[in-house]
Picture: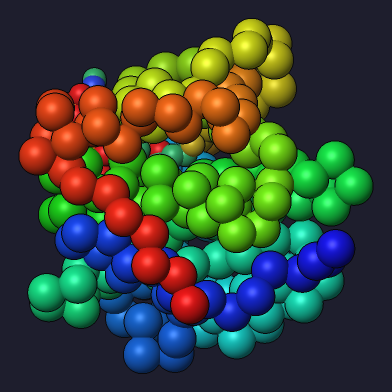
Length: 212
Ligand SMILES: CC(C)(COP(=O)(O)OP(=O)(O)OC[C@H]1O[C@@H](n2cnc3c(N)ncnc32)[C@H](O)[C@@H]1OP(=O)(O)O)[C@@H](O)C(=O)NCCC(=O)NCCS
């Protein structure tokens, strides 16, 4: 049984998910310096090019080779621009589960990219990697992230009270930690039945996974 994720790329109708590359540093840095990213993720603010470089050259390769996870760049197929990232963490190869999260660049939001990337990743995890459970955790007030979880077929399992540290941006530019709840979502292989078709109906989104 696999205990590390392979270096892969996954294609969908509009996107290519592939390993992060040092050429992504400028776009990644710009994407991370964003109010919503600062509020709902643990990505440090301000986010520097040096951090982006460390993530791409050290953290992401370590995560993959240790078996803990996988970090994928989400790019537009047509323009090859970096539009986001999908991250798998806390992978448990015995239970065959992993935790999935996503960030989409502010300029690319509202196009269904997070849903398309997350769904393709889930299809690959269940189909190719034989995982049996994907978990998502969203801050209680992170409506956009919850919409994505719902759209790809996740089931809300409950609330982890006080388990999330979100961040509030003050007028003076500083960030303050705010404790809030996590909503826990899960996706099992059977939850995906019909999800791609529903997304197609809603968004004109077509899903196909072409991983290699
Ligand atoms: C969450 C995030 C990845 C969504 O990316 P996206 O590509 O815009 O997502 P999609 O277009 O696939 O879907 C977003 C959905 O949320 C909805 N949405 C967005 N902002 C919303 C808001 N403030 N209130 C309600 N719904 C909202 C959109 O309308 C869309 O739903 P619809 O297709 O039914 O209209 C993006 O907003 C982001 O990067 N946020 C900051 C980082 C983050 O929070 N990551 C998640 C950590 S768990």
